[in-house]
Length: 121
Image 1 (cartoon, one colour):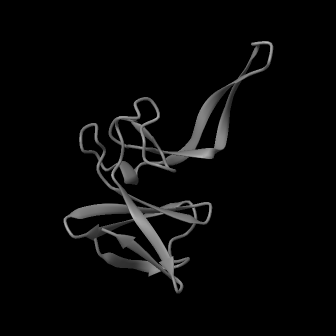
Image 2 (tube, one colour):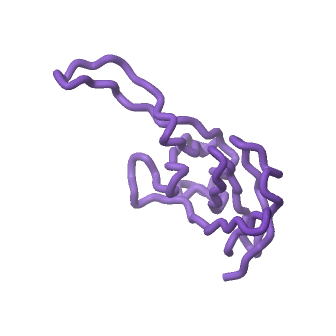
């Protein structure tokens, strides 16, 4: 695996994505909460451009200790990547599909060093 320089730290605004070509792969570099994530821009469902979809918090049911349902809320600590073709959702933290953990985006290591951001591909 080689390290490929992607950008200087901060060149990608928080909450946005940059698609780059590294070797034979289009890779989405996502900056969220000050951290960088890198995934192949290909949904395992039908090959859609997963990283070009929206990123949004996961939704969970708010159920109290008595089992009463109080509606649904957003989980800001669990951001999802939503493929624009068919709405398949993947956890930003590890690329696994929210419904079927056997489906996952291909993840690449991100290295931050000396003010630069690299992807190991």
